[in-house]
Length: 450
Ligand code: ADP
Figure: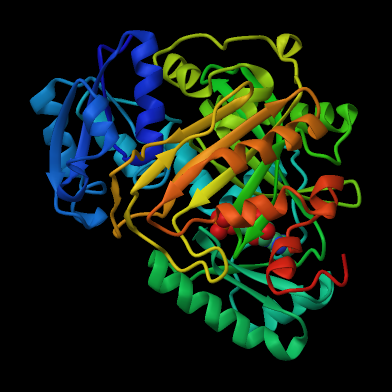
């Protein structure tokens, strides 16, 4: 097993990885920018190294400084968390060149899935159903129009290098298409340095359903059921739950096995998430994330499997924790991403947390790196913490969630807690009756077409 792991991340995910390492008896190295000297992950790690000034480019994304931190501390592997360098294939290769372990998939698979056009081609080849659209990047306005007419408007223009909901534009009619292509292309060029875009049928009221998979890199792979992440704002997930309120056990087993089989064929290593849109009983692949995801605790709650711990084990050559038959889905879990933002305008609200009281009790988990007196810096994402609640049934889970949301106190900054308190009491949410546009409609004051 690895002796010492350097955690190339910050915030709640750094703490999450640290906890798994402690349970496995692995020493931990935290890295931090000068803005994070007082952060919780720094306090709890066995050792820590400052890797640069506040901007991520100069610290958490600074590969030479991370390598130096490994060398100084004698770390033998790196866990990238999510975001930052977690889906950077070159980083994984550089670590290998320095005889350092990377706790993640093989570099070739990160690269393949990082290009959404290649990812879609691969999915199709492996028998995973995909959204109808252009076969590759859009080469000309005429070609785009031909594809759009064949699949029918509205269509979605998406960046090949996309992520975080950027570089995506809807064209409702033929008149909008040229503008959507140039806007998405420009946005993609400035965000990712790659302007190539492709076309997809724009689904009207789908749900976002994703399958969690785990592979041993030698042809063994299992799936751990799904998470429903349909409650989104600007294509960013806000609330995630599992199992999906709309999926039957048979449908779960079918799509889960399709994904697991594909991963066995690829000899995929580590955790991964295969994301789909789901409409009228059909699944449509949109992308695969080759890393641990923010919402992984939902799956941990309903399967009892520690995904980060297993991710470390398989990265070290270990076996899968269970066979597919041994995986059982138990009860229901919901995660709320509590952000330091105004709950109506969503303007970031960094600053000092003057009072903090996390909720507790049966089935309540908080993954957060904040504490009373902590100041949320303005340089990074605005996640205060994740509240994950588990119950025997969805109804019990919602009941417990309302109680936990009433109990939690975060004072001194604005947070999205009031939004969650309202959502947990909304009739559509209670009925599980929502799709990917539901939250935007709710926030704009009307859910007339729900
Ligand atoms: P990103 O990598 O930027 O997160 P994804 O491809 O994962 O992009 O899509 C993010 C979200 O955008 C989806 O969860 C969904 O809400 C919306 N979306 C993506 N593709 C489509 C589509 N073809 N039709 C409708 N909505 C889509």
